[in-house]
Image 1 (tube, helix red, strand yellow):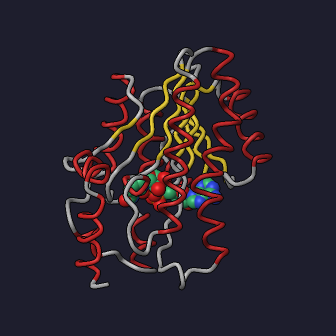
Image 2: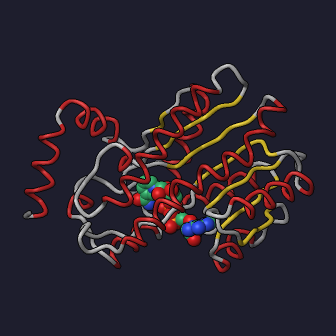
Image 3: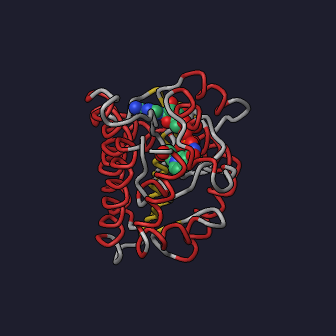
Length: 254
Ligand SMILES: NC(=O)c1ccc[n+]([C@@H]2O[C@H](COP(=O)([O-])OP(=O)(O)OC[C@H]3O[C@@H](n4cnc5c(N)ncnc54)[C@H](O)[C@@H]3O)[C@@H](O)[C@H]2O)c1
């Protein structure tokens, strides 16, 4: 078992689960944080160096406790993966105001809470990595996704500032912006509204995203765009937003 630890939110499913297991295999002590108890049990199965915390990232107090316990029992935190999120979709007129609040609270404030709770330790040791999961939805808004898109735009902005504030520290910051990935998150869209634009382009694997994060950590860049077409879509959003909206309206028939 290594002397250093990593903290992964959303560690009970999808990319957070895979990251937890990969990092445990690499010898880190892993603190896997999630509200999903069953998922956490799955994550830790067969690993003595994964400790699970059934904790809601929206509570700063609870996050502080997890960070203190991790550093005390598992070693100083070397890497932070902020992957917890939810994605209920729907037209603005159909989604409850509470859903907007909840999405922002988990997807954005959760990232802020965990970053704030871990950053002082990383700065003190002048070493570490923070990986924040945004999405291509953090650049490219689309119909039915106002709540989720806004939360991911917020993660992009927050992480860009975090990167620049720590450029002179030995702390690497990555903002990962994947296209649709084959994980349980997509089921939340199926259970609410499935945007037709999700059927355009490939859905990538969780492994592809984690590989792209590692490449980006190596290159020292801020943004990671996994998937073959993601960077092109990002460029199109910058230069031809009207064309992308035309596509959305055409495919949704709105
Ligand atoms: N799957 C995709 O298509 C996709 C695409 C782009 C970006 N992302 C982002 O990647 C990250 C990982 O997503 P995933 O696809 O692995 O999702 P996932 O649904 O498989 O896992 C997310 C986990 O977050 C947990 N979670 C939700 N609310 C929480 C809370 N309040 N506190 C703690 N944990 C909580 C869930 O229980 C779940 O286990 C997310 O930030 C997501 O927005 C996903």
